[in-house]
Amino acid sequence: MLRYFYGLVVFFFLLMPQFCYAQSVTLSAIEKNPHSQSWQIKLNAPASIQVHAFLLKHPDRWVVDITQVQQFNNQVTPAALTSTPIMRIRSAYSNNQLRIVFDLRKKMAANSLQVAVLPPLAKFSHPGAGIAEQARSKDVIVVIDPGHGGKDPGATGIKNIHEKTIVLSIARKLQNLINQQPGFKAVLTRNNDYYLTLRQRLAIARKNHADMFIAIHADAYPDPLAHGVSVFALSQRGATSEAARWLAARENQSELMGGVELNDKGNVLKSVLINLSQTATIQASLLIGGNLLDNMHDIATLHHPGVEQAAFVVLKSPDIPSLLIETGFLSNSHEEVKLSSATYQNSLAHAMMLGIKEYFLQRPPPNTWLAMHARQVYYSCNECVHANKYSYSG
Image (cartoon, rainbow, N blue to C red; front, side, top):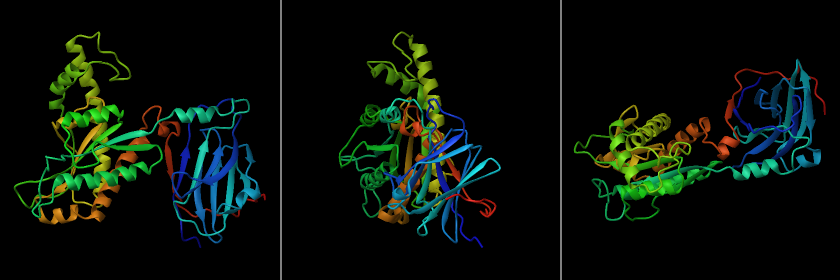
């Protein structure tokens, strides 16, 4: 009886195929994922294929089913398997479906195997073209802003814990987690105890071409019972005046919305264009904020169940999705203790990372590594799949 079923991640790399031929699947490599401890099985196939991947027990084997395939080419030799957890590869066809079975040397963890489906191998493509294209892709840049710093301690707890210290620690942990994710890069506005103005923080985000800006804070309130995590996006009420201020201070007024040039527009139209951009940015911020709350709900009490909106100056970049997270209340003695705990800080940072990652996996910015490697589709085994109706080769 099968007792263990595992969900497996299948990466679809939807790059432009060159001279691809009809529904042929090639097993091109089995290698260690450079970004994690998992093993990656690389298949070259058209983007239209459907993949179902799962683990079977007794004996342990990894199964990949692919529909609408007429040809399977295995370029991985038995000698190449010696340094992998895979002992043998078998394949068979049934009802226009290809099944590839990877017999494992030992039991594998649920997240230790991945299938990467890349574009078909081109018969006549220029060598290295795909590598050059990937080299031009960039990471999703997340700028993390630990609030306050230096002469500005922020909120102070009952035990004299300063907000500036707590949020810097959480920000560093979040940066480390984000930098471990393929296709992401995190940048801190400050990595030590010094003061930055709000506009200096925004300038750092713009200098780094941020795809997202996240400000981390801890709160204080006269009511010592106030507690919980809050997530804020910009209020629409604050957009217009800040847009005008931003335009007046900017010397080179361009590239806000896909390269829209503003230097030949009247002041009224400039404000309209900025507000259109900021409206879309706020909507993106609300979506990311929802993801963050969904993940933080599992490890923290929420002060408010939804993303709140307020006119925080630090959130007013017209074209960068921006959020402010209040991680808790230092004025609450219980939360002050929790926020001082490295374990709790790690849990908060991990939940934030998951929320950010989920959003950008679903909506990768153009010309990024994530966009080049398209979307992730999650498959889980929901029923017992018997292998005995197939006759295997190999």
